[in-house]
Image (cartoon, rainbow, N blue to C red):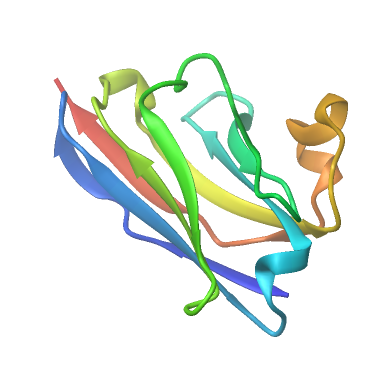
Length: 126
């Protein structure tokens, strides 16, 4: 499957932004989809993911309660709704996918995913 992430931009602290990850080639219904981000000079970090099948979600502690992952089957798209954004959320955001359901212990590991979108920049101003 090929992924394309979009929707990034500049937003003030406290604002909201919605990122989308559009898939082509195959339906995302049978994939686990993850979101990661990478700030300048830092390693890529896990943001959240939705598992294949029941679409159960998990989020990293820094974003839990502020970010939500959802899926639009008709559009074969996964969205990351981000609210109450903080300057420390500034990063390039990537979506990634892998066929099947990942167990919790590897859900947050970038190497668990084999398809990646190109990334979209989110800048949160203070």
